[in-house]
Figure 1: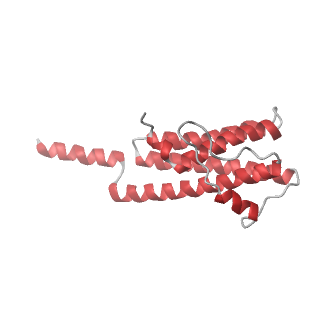
Figure 2: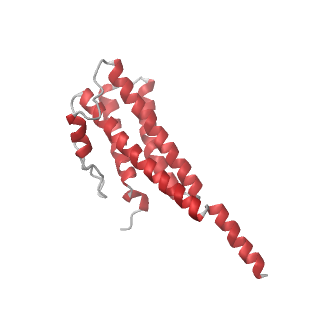
Length: 175
């Protein structure tokens, strides 16, 4: 079975886990009728889906743009988790907190049989929110590197439309 290339991207794999854990998180700790529930679910989904859509774009410019949307959606979700902690007087753990270091040391990814290799959502809402915040930071870091690499490729090789135009000029010169 051949898998689409985006499934191999670490940014995609992390975004799937973030999306799945966010769905669990909102079921546990966000009121069903809350607008925040919908916003968090949509931001998590958008982070994942825009990586897929961008990868499938013919245009490098379009791919970069959609990765930017994924990055921004995850940023929105990050803000929701930080708001959740602040509004409930829970702690946002510092970057150098031992617990955050342990989260960062996890090698979370999703295998291709669709089973997560990340721990279950923690029972504590504070721990769960801090885990998801850490995963979002990791995904955003990877997305920023991915966008920088694609921007460099665009500068060196040009974009889809530009290259089609060059091929058209070559064909015109043949006649």
